[in-house]
Image (cartoon, rainbow, N blue to C red; front, side, top):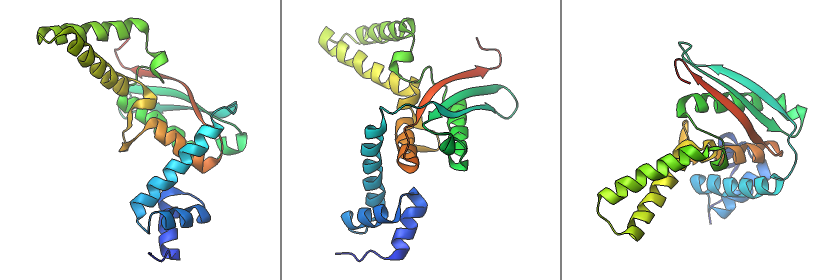
Length: 199
C-alpha cells in the first residue's frame, strides 16, 4: 500500500481545489495514483452536483466577451445560488472561460431541447439521404442516422460539447467540477453569440 504524504495531497489540491481530507481519501482509494485520484474526486463531485441540481439559482453573472478583432461577441448568463459565490474571482474566471468557449465552439443551444425542431429535422433528413445513398437496409440506415444525430448533438449542444481548453471533459463536467468546488448549484441560463455578417 502506498503511503500518502503531504506533498501528494498538496499536488492533488493544487490540481483539483478539493479539500484536504477529500484529497487524502481519494489518494488512499487510488493507491497513490494521481490521475486515478483526480477521477475519484470528479466522480464524487458529480454525485454532489446531482444532489444540488434541484436547488434554485437566482444569483450569478452576466458576462460579455468580444474576441480579438471584434468579429465575434458573446453575452452569457451563468447562475449560482448566492451573491457570495458570484463575487468570487474563481466564479468570474469560470464565467469568462465559459463565454470564450461559446465564442470558439459555436453551440446552437444549451441542451438538446434548445435546438430548433426545424434544424433537427433538416439534419435528420440529410443524414437519412446519405444513409440511403450507401444502399444499406432501412434498419442499418436508421442506426447510421441515430449515430450521426448523436454526433450532431455533441457538437451543437453547449452542455455536451468538449471543453476547448480540456477536450477530455464536457462542458457539463466543467459545471459539475465547479459545483463540487463551490458547494452550490450552478446553471448555464442563456447565451447569445454574434458573428460579424451572420444572422
